[in-house]
Length: 92
Image (cartoon, rainbow, N blue to C red):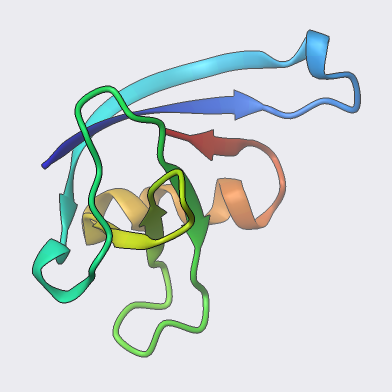
């Protein structure tokens, strides 16, 4: 299952936020979670620093807040410092 995500430079004033970039990826691990997502549905991307399998994990939830899966390990590794340092946020 594919997703498209934006990296947004956060600002105190939401109108002044800047989209830093976009990327496409695949949601992995969907067979382990009960959540579903439809085409063009917004998803929530959340860091999971305490994930026992990957300390860089980024969780994918559907609009109901039910976990669908994770983004790929390689993509999560690149985003970790940016998200944890509160330099930007990711949305999907």
